[in-house]
Every structure is written in structure tokens, then in C-alpha cells.
Length: 397
Image (cartoon, rainbow, N blue to C red; front, side, top):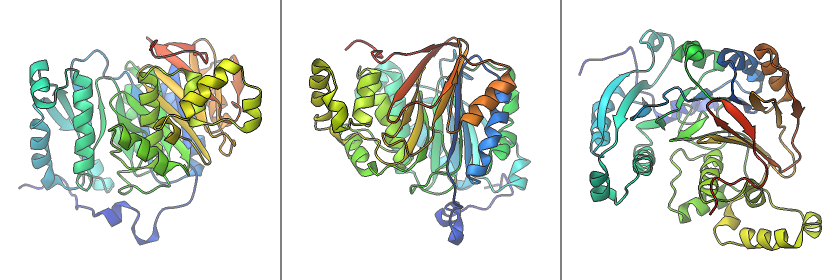
């Protein structure tokens, strides 16, 4: 087979940082929803680079909007596995309309990169999906197969973006390198409604530098996280009981998938806060009687009681048109937000929020650090942003 690139396959040890391991640091988080400038947001995220020097990623919501097909971004550790794994995808009954290099070839000479490709994929017919998996929804069908692929071929490849709308772009390098390798400024004039940015490879174990960078993205879910969850095993058990697979394997991923599950099951923003950030005894004493009954019912559910965000952590999760910001109940990781009637900006440091507003020439109505354990949420539709109250639900169950 002809060598496509000046590229040497990398084993997992090399992907994991080699014998010297990973540099110390903390994750930098920055996100925006509504009407904003992508280049201004990327520029303001640079002030977070000092927190960690390895791994950076960006998710853009809406850049593939109004398509009837799914767009996969896939990285391969070995170019000789590409054709074989493309056949695996074809075996799902999907049709690959087009495949293309996602990264310009010149960068394979400048950086040590996995093979990174983009695919435009149409799902099977409803009859075909029912015959194969007894699933009549193409989103659920594609997500099931993407999760299975990432789990079964974890040593060979990763589908790191799999949406009809969103695109996720990752590297094991700094944010400036990620922007350069994918030429992200070209999307400034494209349509987008939200952006998530993460700096630094996660602290928990994964499958190497290229498999670990965030945002972690699956379909319409994307998330970024800072800190470490002491409840990671409990979260993983809860998802396993629900038949939801971790396909990257970090503690962060469990929070993102749990948020998606809870929203789609019709839990309110306040109830999601109760589940992921339990009340202290003194807080329970002051709760309204009816709320306390509902709280006890939820947190004692055999599955929901395993869903926790324990330990020092901050997370920002995008699910469809909703973005949520979380802090741990002890407030051991910093988290800030600012918003007006056009844009909401969330981040791990207030100076990144103020920097973004400055570069966008926006005067924010409110800038503050949410209280410990609190969940904040915004909804964006057609670039119109709305702050959601505690009682809001994805739908009325």
C-alpha cells in the first residue's frame, strides 16, 4: 500500500506522553453561546494556556447545520487500518457519501499526527435500522454504532465528532497548534451558535494524548471538564446499568453522558443539580417540604444515587441547544460566567470571560461566579440566547 504521509505509527505508550509522562497543570475551559465572534473567543482563550501545555480542542455548534447527513471526524493511529475500519463503518448499513482529509498534508511533516479524516455519512432507512437493531430513530442508531466502534477499536481509531450540526477539532498540542492545524479561523464567516474550548489533556487515564483531549463529543453532546472526580467509578456503574457505554474512558465523559440522559428523561435543571451535587444536612433542614420529598425520592433512586460530581471539578456541557455549567459542591475549582441578551460566556477564570467580552466589544449585563454546587443553564436557538430557570425541563415528562 502506498504511504500517504511522512508518518510513523505510534504505539499507546508514545501517545500517552512516553516515559516522562504528562506535564502538570489544570484544564482551561471557555465556552460561548449566542451571537459572538469565534476569532475573539479563540483569542481570549489564549490567556488560559498557562494552565496546561498538552492537548487542546474546540467544538463548534452549527457549522454543519441543515444537513441530512452525519459528519464524522475520525483519527487513526495507523494509516494501514483506514480501509479496514471504513469497511466496519459500511457494515452498519450507512452510506459514506464522501471522505476527505481534515488536515492539510503539509502538517503531517511539521507535526506527529494520527491520520485525521472527515466523512459525510447517510444513515440506513428506517426499515433497515429496525431489521438490524430494532431502532427507528437514526440519531440513536448512529450513536449506538459510534459508541460501539470507539469501544471496540480503541487501540486503532476514534470517531471524535459524529453530529449532523457540530464539529469537534482536537490535537495533542497547544491551542495555537489546534487552530493552525485545522485552520479554524476559516469558520469565522460560517454559521455557528456555540463554541466549547478546552486546554490540557485530562488527568484521568485514557488511551493516550490523542485519545484524551476534550471536548469529548458524541452526536449532539459535547463537554469540557476541569478537575478530578472521586465519584468516577460510581458514575461509570450508573451508566453501565443504563446500557450507556463510555467510549473514551475518562471521568469527565461520564458527567457529559449523564447530563444528556437526565435532560432527555425530563428532569428539571434544579433536579439535575440535586442529583449531581447533593445537599448538605443544614440545607435539607431549610428545604420546602414538597421539594424535600421529591429530593429524597430522586437521590435514593438505585441508579440516580450513583450519579455524582464529587471532588474538585467544574464542567460545561452542551446537549443539543442547551448548555449547562456545573461546579462541585465544595467549590474547589473556579468557575465564572457573564451574559447579556446576545451572548453567554462561561469559563474556568473570570479574566477569560472579561477578555472575550472585550474582544467582542460586548458589555455584559452580569458577570459572576456561581455559588458552590449550583447549575446554570442557557438555551440557544438561531443564535438567540435565553437563561433558563431552575424549573425548566427538556420536555414535560
